Length: 204
Length: 204
Length: 204
Image 1 (cartoon, chains in turn cyan, orange, purple):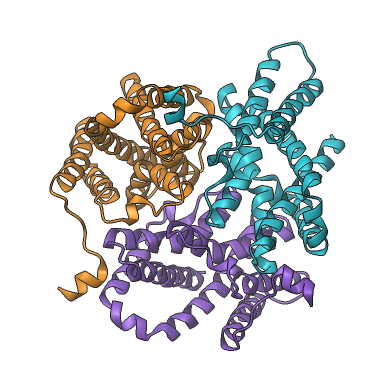
Image 2 (cartoon, rainbow over the protein chains, first blue to last red; image 1 turned 180 degrees about the vertical axis):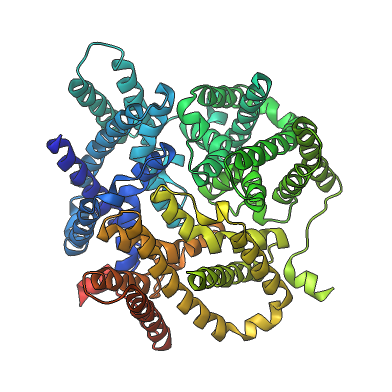
């Protein structure tokens, strides 16, 4: 339990770094960068919790906001170096969305959502922070562009829900499902894969 | 009760078709189209429920997500034909917003909102899904452009609330109010009517 | 208590005027202007309440929506004159965000948020209505541009939380903290101050 908690804080910090870096690249001031770090890190989980009609975890536990502040400070101090670590950040992000998807599905099922809604809310947990970040920066959200990101989370969420019907342990299930998200995301970027859009799909 | 339930699922499906078609027209991939179908279909009702501090219905009842998936599949399969059915879709949409407005007002009153808030939340139920869709597609929302859409819903919502003070039955009230929305929407598009903006209004 | 209530209604009205005026300047029709007034006035407080998992106050108390309607009507009637009162409106806005920040922090603490989250939610109360307004108008939100606005609210919120650990009365604390927001905002606009962005900060 404690282990999961610290992983969750770590994931929150990584997402905050990614959000703040996006703001830094656009010349937004340090307050705005902090705000974007916050939104990117807690947007997805907060939306999930709002739909589950429970309080987002950061409202009562200040450690999440502290983790975000640490992430923002890291993004400022290591601003130039972080760009050299783009590859490392990509790997962290791919691990992070896998983890957040699994946590999101688990929490939704624990709060009595239907299986199909848990899939949706698991994907939301991992992806909606980035969507809100993109909307605030006034660009079309990544998940509406031709990249396999949210669909990797969706696949992992579906597998997690299906495996809950088997005798597999929750820990093993979490590991497998998060790995599926990571592998799909990694392979799709490595080989530049994308899903078809409808008009193209029709022509084939 | 069961009848209303199926109408609600049908309305959800029609909105999903409209959201997915908007995505298809913009060359967004099939995942993004599904996501836009979902957002358009459940955005308005979810926002209403979040403000009422209750769970959106789709969180516990997976049938709504299934209805959305069916709508998205229809939008993909019939992609070219649907454009020929633009007129039919317009009529469905005009009926749909009337229905969703009435359901939204009823639900808000049932959960102890004030009469004036119920009007607002009824309009939200019908229109905010489209607003969120437009924000995600990075275009100015339809309801801020010169077309009578949300104002038709507002008129229907006001009439519904006013008629609850009379001896009319709830069913008859729902029918009249939804018809008002439909007729205003239909006439305004047919005769290209729009509301004035303030500077113009001042010059007159 | 009653005094605070009327101040809250007044603040709501002032924010509605500002939202409706932004819409009027963009040639949006009178419905859209009303909608923008509403969103600007209640967006921040509603988001705070949704995160606290309580109902926004306007859902049950119709007076808030009436205050917004009055604000919108004022913005229409006095459309040309209001532009001459830009300075007055700026002062009202600076007082308003100070007041809304303090109310937001107080309410969050009263509903058992952590101290650091109360700071965040206090800032949200004052600023997120404007953020939602800007997102809907499809422009980059003010708080991501180089102006000291949300950071003034953040400073006031931090001071309020710190002073709750002293023996100062709640009323005096509210006055001091709101004054801090006002003074920072006023001075930063008067002397055209702004926070650094990260690349610039790094070069120095």
